[in-house]
Image (cartoon, rainbow, N blue to C red):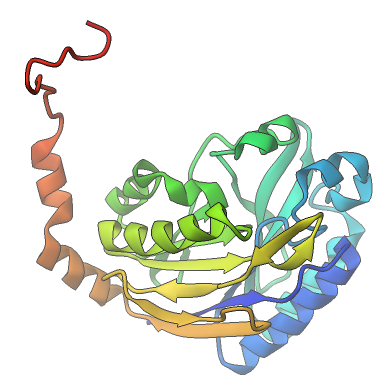
Length: 274
C-alpha cells in the first residue's frame, strides 16, 4: 500500500513562482501523509511551447539550475518524493521532461516525453525510452500528456508489471478536454493499473487549461478528482487490486492469444495497398 497525491494550482508564470507553488503543495501533501506528489506538465516555467522559444527563462537550464534549489529543500523538509514537469535544456536540445526530486534532495530526469503533440515537435527533442520508478514496492510507469492517447504505450508498461501509470499533463478546454475524460479511464481499464493525472489549471499563454487532476482505479472507476479546485488529492493505492482485476478480466492473456491478427476482406472490399 502506498499513498500518492496529485496537485494543481493556477499555472504560475515563471520558474521561481512555480517552485514556490510546488513547496506549498508539497507541504499539503505531506500533511496528508502522501509519499509521492505528482504535478503538471511543464509546471516549472509554464506550458506554452511558443513562449519556451521566446523566453529562455521559461526553460530550466539543466539539473544544476539554481532555481531548483528550493525544490531540493522542499523534498527534504517534507520527506516527500516530487514529480514535476519542466522544459529542460540538455545537450541534445530542450526536452519536455518529468523531473524526480527525491527525499534526499537529489533532482534527476525521471522521463522525457516520447509522443510529442504536433506543435511541440518544433520546440522539443523527443524522448526515446519509457521509465519505471519503484516506491514502497509499487511500480510506477511514467508518461506526459499525449502519451496517454496511445494504448501501445501503456500496454508496454502493463507487460512490465506496473501498478500505477502516472501522467503529468496539460489538457486545455475543448477537444482536448473531451479526450482527457476518455483516455485515462480507458488506459486504467485496459491495463488494470491505477492511473494518476496531474493537469495544468487556469489561463496561460492564451489557453484555458481545465485541471481535473485525479486518480482512476484499475477498473476504470474514478477514485478522486480535484475539478477546478486548487490543492491536492490523495489516494491509497493497493497493488493487489491490480492483480485481482487482471485475473478477472484476462485482458493480458487474451490479447496475447489474438496477436497477430490477420486482415480479411469484407464484402470483397480491397485492402488498402493491394
